[in-house]
Amino acid sequence: MKKIFLFIFTLIFLFSACSSNKDNELYESANAKLKANNYAEALKDYKKIIDEYPNSDKAAESFFAIAVMYHMYQIPNISKDESFKKAVEYYQKCYQQFPDEEKGAKALFMSGFILANEINNIDDARLAYKKFLEKYSSHELAPQAKIELDNLGKTPEEILQNNTVKK
Image (cartoon, rainbow, N blue to C red; front, top):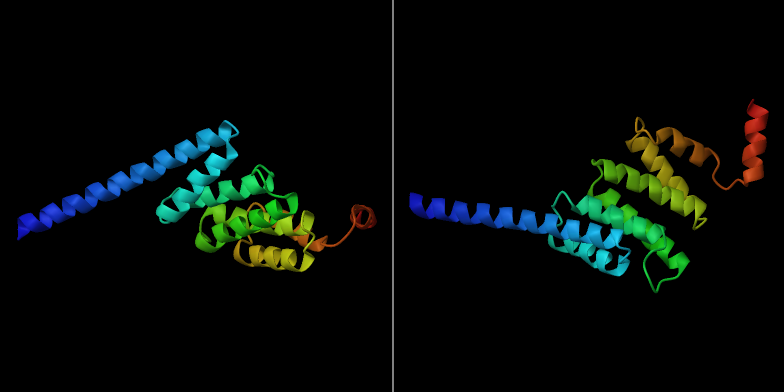
């Protein structure tokens, strides 16, 4: 009985070690493709990590990388508006699945930023920034989130005027 248990334990250990290496290899492959400006193939690799290795330590990084690619308008055959919406979608998924990780915090902030500054969805941006400040009040991006929240919907001229009056 002990031999069977030991055999099963060894198989489980080997399987998990192999899958751990596979997600790391896939992540390195995606990063190399990204660096070579092969965005469509990098996207496939990052998505494969998310789908096949959702508990991997590379999953949060993959969500974030996909969001950045969409935010930077690097995915071919998609409109700029759709690309920004996909960026928000992936940033929000990153936050939802990894709220206690650094990438999750940054992803929530970035979703608010894109909603406010690229998509002009002030209501959803306000919700994202408020959620960010509630959950991550001591994060390095908290002061910027507060500034963004205070200036939502204002023109650059209005922001400058308010800053001049405060001085």
